[in-house]
Length: 241
Image (tube, rainbow, N blue to C red; front, top):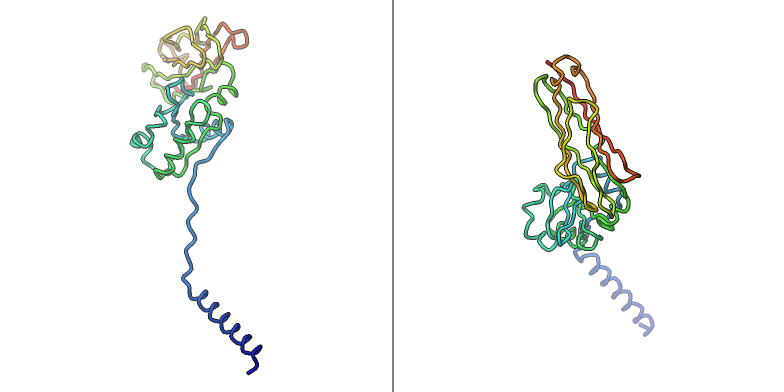
């Protein structure tokens, strides 16, 4: 056989053998995609809280004044050691924030490493949240007391937050009816401080039927700030005998 033909035949044999080896080699399984946390904006943070009931945790150290409605404060360096304080459902929605967004990155990753699958980190932290919520807020806008039996006294709470970088004086707190009382523990709020407004509703205070049926009462809070001189929220109830 001519030398060139021998070389060609040998090359063909090598190619065939190589192809067989490749085809017989066990195929590796594709590695599953790694679960990670999601960075979200202030608007997305607010939307999630309005639409569902997430677990909200502040991980900044040292402890700071929290975003109203925060469920827990856990030092970002202690997340791994305090997992028992988080929801036991690993699919629970968890919102994590700190002051500027750096400590919460580490905390969010620790939660993902612990098996949580629905972790969201607030980009920019509480600084971004405060920037977007400059002002003074009384929340929620409405609290529904549902059914209240005439003769009983129902109670609920609102949160007053000073999202300004200056001290705020509360000059007056009142309501639209004597059947409704609102109380606060202090009349001066430091910058970024929140306080609880305790509200009670007594439909029998007038000793007549004027507060029976579906009722709405308004809470008024007046402050020293000219741009937020009066804030209001309402309670609703269905009063029965």
